[in-house]
Amino acid sequence: MLIIGDLILDKYIFGKVFRISPEAPVPVVDVVNESYLLGGATNVADNIIALGGKASLAGIIGKDDSGKILKGLLQERNIAVEGVFEDNRPTTVKTRVMAHNQQMLRFDTEDRKRLEGKGLERLLTYIKKAMGEHDAVIISDYKKGIVSAALIRALVSYAKTKGTFIAVDPKVGHFHFYKNVSLITPNLMEASQGAGIEIKDGKSLLKAGKLLMSRLSCKALLITRGEEGMSLFEKKASGEAKVTHIPTVAKKVFDVTGAGDTVIAAFTLARVAGASLVNAAVISNHAAGIVVAEVGTAVATPAGLMESLGFLQKK
Image (cartoon, rainbow, N blue to C red):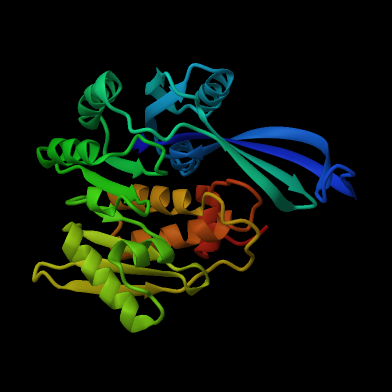
């Protein structure tokens, strides 16, 4: 898998709260420890590795300590980093302050300006070469400046000659970028805003999904709907969209952070391994059910999926 998009370092500060600050009406967190995890496109790559696939990343980090930490984590996970380039912008870092299993605060370090000029040329040169060496492409758009209309057009053009499967985890405001890709995986809010239709029932869901399919000319659309599960729209030969509703399997939901990364990773890996679109969606649904039961960005494993799907007995 070639994963292209916004590379994010997730920093977690864990602590306990026993008092309110005398300086302002805010809690004082006594820090116990800190940890770093892969976020954004890097979490998609981590999910691919955890599921038994091979992953390469294409994106930008800064010339800073956070970039070094992020690159080190990627190398530890055997994620290929030949397409990870340094740029004159800070590495995107999302810092979450956690106390008593709850997120109290998040602050971001980032520069969201669009990647252009030599930086974009360098990235596209790598991508053009790498696409011939990978079975599929996943675009992880967190609206941090890497994913643009020019990048998508180039990818679609490269993919035409090889029939490469291109999946996109979209961001509101960028839906017009994603024309002619194989799959997009918006959540309910993103699909609603992308279509310009308030999704409040089954009828409006179908209307929004079919409109997005038509507008973007994509082959498949997977709308994740939280506790309502997922809805898969498939483009048939007749031009009509076939819709399959898949109920959720999540029994506990502690943290939805990174769940979308897991969905697109599991779906794409299953699809290029030979699964039908429906079966790929079912597998990704089970993968999501596994990770939302964990605090922080998490991954599903083949053993966990087999157990969730009922092929292995629980230990």
